Image (cartoon, rainbow, N blue to C red; front, side, top):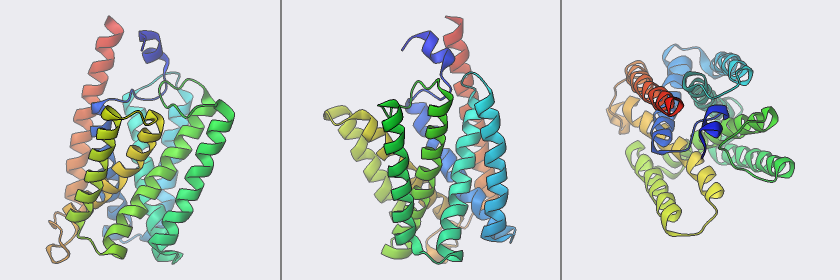
Amino acid sequence: MSNLDINLSKVAEISLLFWFMKIIATTLGETLGDFISLTLGLGYLVGMGITLAFFIIVLAIQLSINKYHPICFWLVIIATTTLGTEISDFSDRSLHLGYTMGSLVLCSFLILTLILWYKKFKTLSVYPIFDRNKEIFFWVAVLLSNSLGTAFGDYLSDVIGLSYLNGALVTAGIIVLIIFLHYFTKINQIILFWIAFIFTRPFGATFGDFLTKPTSKGGLDLGTLKASVVSIILMVILIMMSHHKINKVELK
């Protein structure tokens, strides 16, 4: 990848650092979403309204800039994971769709988005992205992926009955399998990316629940606020690392 591509792309380069940041962002989305709707007692509808407003604001900023900025990009990712938590919980507990039906609906919308994306651009590659319309497709797919991942993570714990830790281990196992397929098979890398992108969300969701839920339910009972603060600190550190990496590339 040339320095020109790196300087002009609107999205982050897919690297090991990207996946670490994605997992921390999804954990933060789970704990922060629960903090807004449950800990503050605002409810899922109000929580969804707050996180939707935040998503729209940071997305508008992201779309207005002309190249990748780690702070803007990862704020939108965090917004999609937080909004995804509220969408999943609202669908299940307020609309009473259940996590099984909710997962199927979100999966259908995600597949439709990817089909329309491919039909327009003849590729689902996510790096680099320069075109505004392609970036919009990317963010719609990201929001649906994170909402689906949240619903699937809750499906593992609430429907199948896995503990939060076991749910995290199951999704971690799927991620490890995808890494193996990436390095040792010829399966399409774009397909593997989107599968990994979806399953890092339930891993973050179940791990977030493991950190915050009471010990009687198999959690560590850290609380949504403490867990969110820890995740925010980690994200700040990783964003600084990402920004430093970009500066080194631009100086070459």
